[in-house]
Image (cartoon, rainbow, N blue to C red):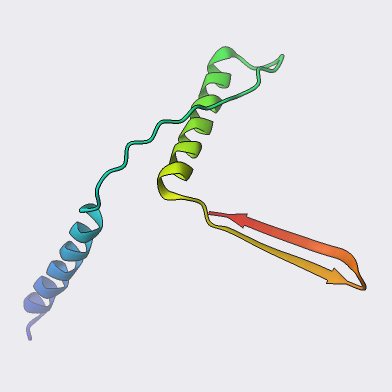
Amino acid sequence: MTKWGLFIVITIIMLTAAFSFASEKPVWVESEGMAVVGEIETQKEVKERAKIDAQNKAIEKAVGVFLRSRTLVSNSQLKGRLQRKR
């Protein structure tokens, strides 16, 4: 197989994979974001934080959340805790 033939085969495989992921049905989600107004923040900064909060909540509703947690206990006492959220 020539280099061009291999290139074409790899390109077709990659495009097929890309279209298979893109063919999922879109989901419509509504969410509300909240942010507390501080003394030194402008109204624009607070609105931006509320917008980011709303976007994060919308993604959590549409896609879901994966949470992993680990706890280290030694002699019946908590030594460490690790939590990850994706």
